[in-house]
Length: 423
Ligand SMILES: [Zn+2]
Image (cartoon, rainbow, N blue to C red; front, side, top):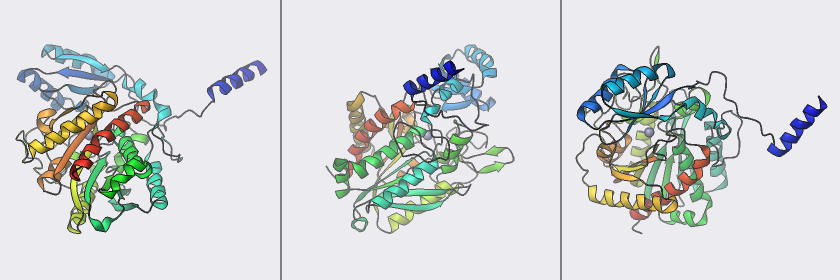
């Protein structure tokens, strides 16, 4: 007995015996789930993937069916054989991208801050909502140039917060608006955006940008969904509004009032779909709060120039439009800046990004924040960033990759900041 205790103590000394993170009871298991990557190269193969998506609501599409890009979707363990047979029958090439989603998530638990206990923020972990909001509060208490707005409440009553970094708001300097975590499971988007905020606040060289630019961050547009990914379901994407007794959530990034529901296959009218657009544009209190804040800020003189919506995954830096393959009016300038962004990202760790209009680079979409921000004329330099990786981990990017992802992304975004001030 003593020997056993001594052995455990010795092990603890070596390992420091940190408390293991364990998810709450009822955290959905994805044991045995696979992510399959399919590659449609002909119209028939593309149609067979669209039909597969339509006929199998239990498949979670991580990347929508596309002829120009890979199509990734998560398959429950009891459906793998059936889906494999279907793909073979339709001559679609495919392979398992992630062999066990549950195992991959469990292997990262120590990098998830899942409980309500607040910890100092770091970029080696994914933090929950309470910790993020407490950090915003600490920033505003410590620095006069940080201001936190509560711009509304989510469906479940959580605050939606914008953080403004500005040394002189009344000067109406060119302003950037950056948001993240509209899709709840895209944790790396928030981790990266919070890193950027921290750099501007605490790194003197980046802080000097505030001499010329104001920054507005909406780091967690979808707080209900984000919280839900920590308490209940790591793979949740949508909001948490209730559409019917058994159907929750709207894809907030199909809910904006610009060309809403305007193109076939660009969003879904079925509430169980991951791309459900909602019953009306701005049906979600989260997107509505963002609309009102941006419009009112603009009316009161804020000089918005650039809007970047941060997502994962795929390594793309994309410009409008989503709803049409036609190039936007400012195509050449937007594309040129996007190429510089991609070059700067690549210069840090060699990570390769693809640039172009979102409809032609990944797949067509409608009612997105990007098309709304550009189409209404509220912003000119409008982009959607899809951060790391290209699918090895997909949405389940390991915590060890937060820092390199954040560093290279900030190196890229700085190009946009400098462009809008002519530097
Ligand atoms: Zn997304």
